Image (cartoon, rainbow, N blue to C red; front, side, top):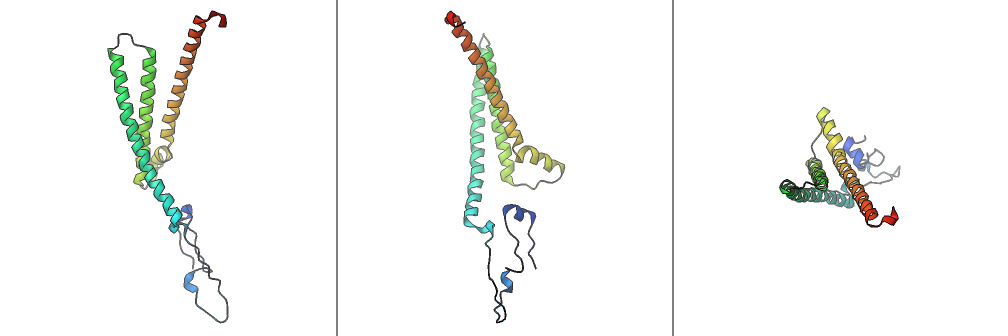
Length: 176
C-alpha cells in the first residue's frame, strides 16, 4: 500500500514509496528474488539540510541589512530635512535627494516586512492569505519600491548630465 504524501512533500521532492520498493515486504523467500532498493528521502539528505539552514540564516542576515538600511536612511533623511528647512535658498537638488532617500527608506522597510513574514512561516488561507502572499511572500511590494528608487535615481542622473552639458557649452562655446 503506498504511503500518503502531503502536498508540501511533493513540492520539496519527497517521493512516494510504492509496494515494490517498500522495506516492510522484504521477507526472504526461496521462490522469488526481491530487488531491495531504498531511496533516501531528499528531506533527510544532509546537503538538503545544509541548504535549508543556510537559507534560514540568510533570511535573518537580509533582515539585519534592512534594519541597518532603515537606521542609516532615517539619519540621512533627518539631516537633509533639517538642512532644507534652515537653508534660505531651497534648491531642487535637495528635494531630489530627499525623495530618493524616502524611496530607499521605504525599500528597506518593505525588505524587513517581507522577510519577517517569510521567516515567521505563517499559514496563509483565505483572501487575506492570498493578499499577503501576493504582496509580501512573493516580494512584489519590495520589488516595486526598489524599481521606483532606481527610476528616481535614473531621472536624477539624467538631470545632472543635462546640467553638466549646459555648463560645458557655456564654458566652451565652440561645442554648441
